[in-house]
Length: 320
Ligand code: 13P
Ligand code: SF4
Image 1 (cartoon, protein in one colour):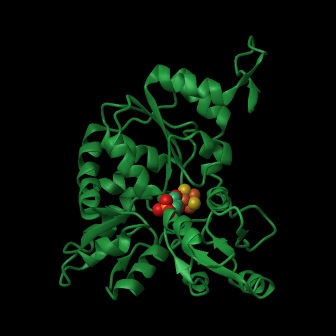
Image 2 (cartoon, rainbow, N blue to C red):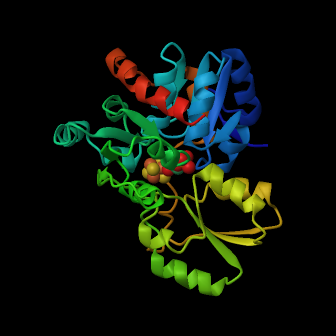
């Protein structure tokens, strides 16, 4: 049982957080959506756990009155864009994203203006302002599929992740103008240390998320979104895997394939910088507190919400 002492100074009795969150869920008619990079206890309490595409699809169809988003700000914002009349709660409002931050809206507006005939495809890991300036959104699960649906004579801007953009260019043979953004977590993996690890574990297959740099991706035998990686380890005949993405996903891999071994890909330094510092700001206590006090809540200007909804709906239609 996961217990804690309530945040109120008068409450000193430990409570069972799992039971208390389940009670609040019923009281609020809430749904808890969580990404695989959350702490294992948050993953275990979620109603739905998934990658960015799966989470958007769930947010688009939920009947709940309140959406509790255990993920980062751009994900909760996406849920709000899809559900402007529902309350969307994020356990810690400071849970941002280095990739989303690498694309400031005013600089992107100038970039877009310099390429007036280009279609703008943005990775969902961006702010609502960038979404509002985009024609179509994509996730790591459907980026290739979406770019393949664009007529060949239409030039494309791809933002903000240069690594995913390069991966999509390699897969589709399409030339795209790339915004030079990146994820601090996926750029932390060391090619040299990864090769050393492969030598130490010759039986292990290397799998990677497309946000990793090309130098890392070229050592992977399978590349995919977090959900795709999770499915792959179950289907593959390999008994061991070197996993080049945020290690939160390993909790689900170990549950799905308990007899297999999962080795996190090593960061450059002796640090835990392969753990996303933004995702890990959320805790079970903060999840409980945000439901109890119905704050922090995601809010968006109406004009941004309306403009950002269009490319999001296009993505959902094009991924069916
Ligand atoms: P997916 O959820 O598309 O696998 O992407 C991982 C990620 O970096 C989310 O922030
Ligand atoms: Fe953003 Fe990278 Fe963290 Fe994903 S892992 S939320 S892209 S900083």
